[in-house]
Image 1 (cartoon, rainbow over the protein chains, first blue to last red):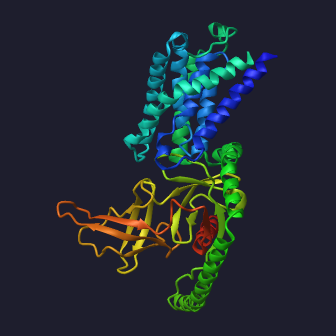
Image 2: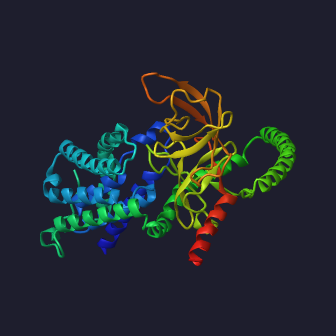
Image 3: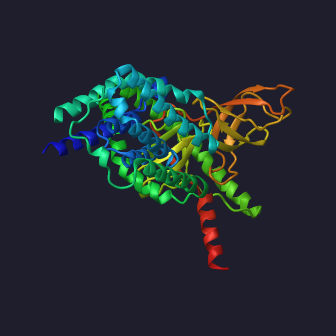
Length: 157
Length: 296
C-alpha cells in the first residue's frame, strides 16, 4: 500500500517542478530561475534509482521542450545525459555530506547547460553568458528543494 | 542528504538494457528528433499533440494570475472607470473620424490598383487573443497565447497590438500557440522607412525596448525619428503595419554598416492581449500553389 503513495509524490514533485519552470517572475528574476526539473530528476535518481531512470528523465525533457517551446529533444538529451551520470554515481552521492552533494549537483547542472549551449550554438541561436546563472541559483536552492522532496519521501514511509 | 528508501535494492539487478546503453540510445534518438525538428520541420504535428498534453499545466499556472487581474478589474474605483470610459469614448470618436477617411482612401487605392492591374489587397481579418501568464524562456522573447489551431491560428501568423507589430507564431497547439516577439535576437522582420521608401531588415536585440537595423550602409537615407512599417516582403507579415521609430543612428566610418537602433511601436512588455491577423494576401498565396498542383 505504500508504493502508490510514493509514486504520487514523485508525480506531484515533477508537476510542481514544471509549474515552477513556467510561472512568471518579474524582470531580472526570470533569468535566475533555478532548473527545477533537472534538480528533481537528479534527486529521484539518487533516491529511488529503480523507479526513476534515464527513460523518465528523457520523457521529462521532452515535456520541458514542449512546455518552453525549445527544439524538440534538446532538454531531453541533456536530462538523459545527467540522469545517466547521476545514476552512475548514485551510491557515492548518497553518502556525501551536504556541501559535497551541492558540488555534485553543480557539476551535473554544468553538464546539463553545456549540452543546451552546444545545441543552441549548433543551430545558430543567439547565446549569452547569462544563461549560466541558473546553475548557481540552482545550487543555492538545492538544499531547500531536496529537503522538501525528502519530507515527501519521509511522509509516505 | 538525500533520503534513501531501504527497499530500493533492485538497482543491482536491473532488467532490460543497462542504463548506459539506454542513455546512448536515447541521446541518438534525441539528435534524430532535433535534426528532423530543426532541418525538416517534420515534427509539427507531434508537437501539436504534445502541446495538447502540456496545455493543462500552462492553463493551471495562468489561472491565478488571470483571476487576480479579473478581481482587480472588478474592484476598480468607480471614478477611474468613469475616466477610462470617457477616454475610450473620445478615442473611439477620433478613430471613427479617421476610419471615414480610410474608407475613401481604400476605395481610391483599389481603383488605382485595378488601373495598374496589380492584385488588390483585401482587408485583413483579426481575432483578439489573450497572452497566457507563463514564462517560456528567460533569455528569449517568447510568449504563449490562448488561441490555437482550433481558432484557425497557423504557424507564421503575424501578431499585432494596438500600436504595431508584436511578433509571429512559431508553434501551434490545439488550444494555445507560442509566438516569438520582434525583440527576440533570433527574429528578423522586413521593414520599410516611410519617408524614403528604403527597404531593410529589422532584427531583435534581446531587450524589449529595442530593435536593430544592422544591414544599412553608412550613406543610407535614414535618420532619427523615421517611422518604420512592415514592407510585406517575405510574405509573413502584412504590409504597412507600424514596426517602430528610429531612435539613434550611429555612423562609424570604420565600420561597413551603420549602427541603427529603433524603438518598437508595440508595447511588448505591457501587453495583455494581442491580435491575430489573417491578411488578404495570404489566402491568395495559399490558393495559388494548390491550383498549380492540380493542373500539372
